[in-house]
Length: 100
Image (cartoon, one colour):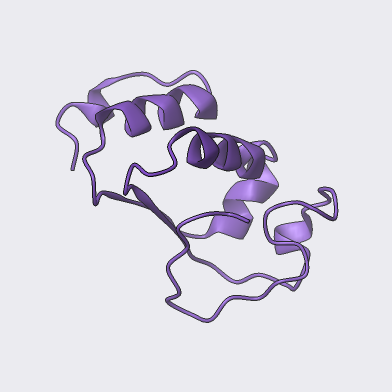
């Protein structure tokens, strides 16, 4: 838990992720439940997560994505073939430390 994190207004996802990565301690876990549903509502989330993961390599901050996905197309996501989960299925409970 990051004290005061929920007391701030986040106008967009990039601001929220930036603030979280700035304040999270090593070993912290960002868990996003129902990730396919989130992506269907905010198509920019996969690329923003990738950006922040790339910028914070070695930080020992982890990302866990949960929810049902269809191989290559979570919740109808129409991103490029090289995008975060294209053509991959993950076992339940698998922890992702990167979106490659």
